[in-house]
Length: 560
Image 1: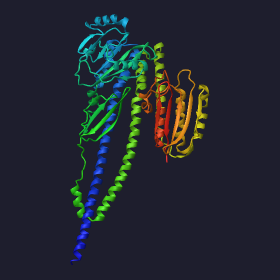
Image 2 (image 1 turned 90 degrees about the vertical axis):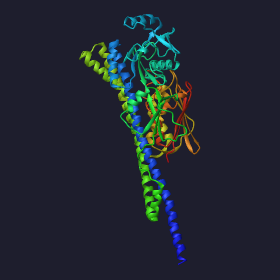
Image 3 (image 1 turned 120 degrees about the horizontal axis):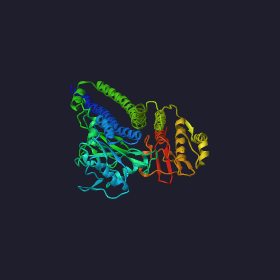
Image 4 (image 1 turned 60 degrees about the horizontal axis):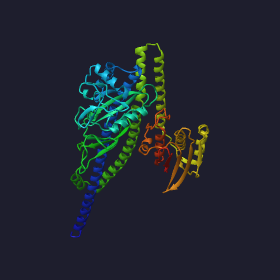
């Protein structure tokens, strides 16, 4: 009996030891599963908040474009007309602090402009600015941009006559950029005259011209939107009761909404980007820790291991491990699909709204004012409608092409030299017309790739090099491929207009353009396609460039 007891103790001790170890293994498996659940919930909350905020921003910007369409259609608006149109949008979109008309007033027009405003009933009106805490008449300068119409006026009356770009260099730059590009441009963080200094706000400027030329000679004025970030963000997410906190910073790193996270506090969070006019801001959504999850305590698992046999525990662990792998696979697939869907929905909602609203506004004007009789003005409206429609068709086509990238299912061993030759044949006409010289420094390799996508990648890079040339320039494109660090690095170098350093990341964002249509045609999809194609090949793409000194695009292809 004495010899049996140690064996029993040994077996029991082994079972107990194994059971305890398995308890901890299962515990960590459950904790890992819970972490995945937390990540999924936080990712879902982030996607909801991101989409709602971006939608609210786009609604606000679309109201500016629609108001501009009214200005163009009526060749200017009187104060009562402006108030009527603007009040419609401010009543529908509660996050608007104010909509303002900011006319361009030249120095020689200043006195008569101020006199006309006083005759309208604004007895103390003057074009003014602030120095410190003092409000003074603006000094002499070639051009002023005073706030003249305000809706709603009540609560914003102190802004009347104030020139938003008089003393703030960054705001002057925003106004000048809006005028020179014809795009909606956002200011840096501002302090609203009649509000508390602690409130964070921005201005968005949309230019209005005498004709289609986007320059300071044709500028009539600016539609200006004033937005308190607290109001805008709270309006966007007011219908959601989510256990998270939101932090938003602008492109300068200024805190625009929420509170800085404590350095000593470990916080679960998701980060992404939102777009406000020309600016890309950082969005951070942090978990508040109140997620309702079935957390598993170690002591429970420990006692379970003592009750069940090693096989039961092992089966449970194997089942959990297999389920976890399947869950990770499905989560990864779902996240990828969500990212593609979010980018597609954002592109449609953001970039197609401007031409769509232009068409809708102008069609409404034709129906209301002309009723089937088209004179000179009617023809002008039709031209605007046709231009907007054409732009919409182009955007939709490019967007659908972007969405189709990656649908090519079969990869193959591809001779990239042959791909380059085929691209040269396809682009033969524009190469000849532009006098383009293509220099190939090395033999291009044979590697595994998606043939159609690779052809589009080469074609986009060569087409861009030909298009983005200074006036009278003769394109020279140098192409090579080198084996470095166990990978092929392709180089497409050109002698074009170059890309300023601060925009070299933005060029790969879909629909992100650095030039207006009057300078270089396009929709901003080509380089986004290039990035997506390189991503399909598990590679990277980047650019090295200086303004007016050409660009060198590098990319790797690592499809195995």
